[in-house]
Length: 222
Image (cartoon, rainbow, N blue to C red; front, side):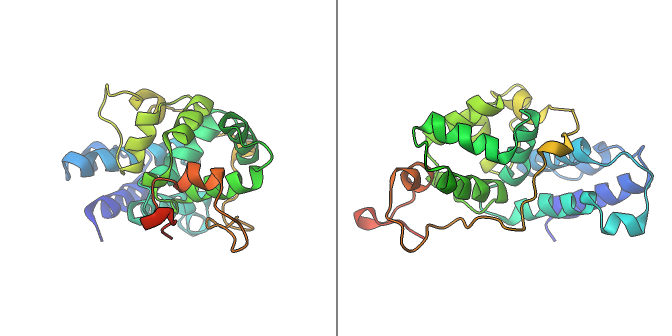
């Protein structure tokens, strides 16, 4: 198990057993990029951790345990910490995913194609969409809707938080409010597919979300 994943799980288990547990001892066991990534993941966990006494049996079936899985899965996906960061920013902006998608489609000039935008945005939140293919226009639009910057979103896609003082660090990683449950939509049942449907021609929406990842002759690579 990678050090970051192991330390994240260990911190969460210790914190759930004793809420006085502090991250410093865990952060000191790694350095560089790993430390910044672990710091971002612990920060995301603490923001969403339930405020109740620890119960091992209840924890196994709790949202907190699902959050642990989401955080550690983001370490192995293609999109860095987007599965943690994007929902978190959306919650901070008090937007349901459907509301964000509608606004995003409008800003991008593709109103009327919200269903396709939804599929791609869902894939971003799940860490299933290759970040290199997502255009700056999409990231600029998301940044304007959620109060961050394009550079901060690119940094999150690389899998670690920006260093303190870097552009976007405060907006992206320093939120402390617990997300409103009203904005926490499920991400499994009925989730839209990330890929284009077989009967769909490549269009502007595909270009916006996957245009930078194309094969010879302009053929999409996936």
